[in-house]
Length: 338
Image (cartoon, rainbow, N blue to C red):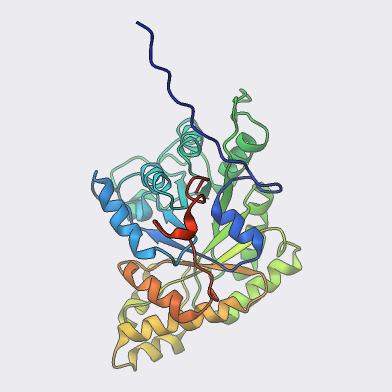
């Protein structure tokens, strides 16, 4: 009895000058101001939980980050969330943390994610296990962000594993990394970004930026180093729930600087939740005008439903409508790749 042949899967073309067929890279290369956000992976094996969480961003973001054990807490895997999102046409950014896997497993995930239609990958060193819900687990850290970027770029551009063994088909991916303009020492942050770009980063998503003079200073240093036109930078931003939340973040989250004036403004508001959204709107509008900023990465922890309102009020899309499931203008685009 002969086996039934499996239908071949159409492989979308990579546009000239691109490294992936994905929409995020296309939006950034077009010069549009890109919007990305994060979806919190569920503590569940139900794919509908992923789709429900992602749907709040429909029509407002160009890509959705699938976090990889953020804060060293266990959730559905980034590979699975990214594959589920890509399956229905979203543009996922698959985060890869070096904390939990060695280079064998990570390289396998890069190939696997790409085979499942994931075009964007964000390379991270990862939070220490002591910060999460399994502090007794053993951290791996076989790689760090720099070495992971180097390995991922070699897989894509040179078609070989780190061992030197050849692969037959390259992962067609857009590579990213994270940076923190507010981290100490400030004068080293732009240099760290430059090293990540040299290692292979094509886009950067930053930590929360609430201090605009500090962000401007960082961007001027990036430009002085000659990297402003070598990488796409998406500034991190998010709505604060209250002055108390802002104080807690400033005290307990390394590398986050929230100015006193901003906290005082929150504390003096009759509706601190609404004020936090308004501040976020204003920050996005200000970021839009900073040279070298190509978009924003909105991290609205437990306020994901507010992202659409914030982006709409900011006006930074200027009438542009990012992809959303089922929209008539998406016909054909859905069949390319995410």
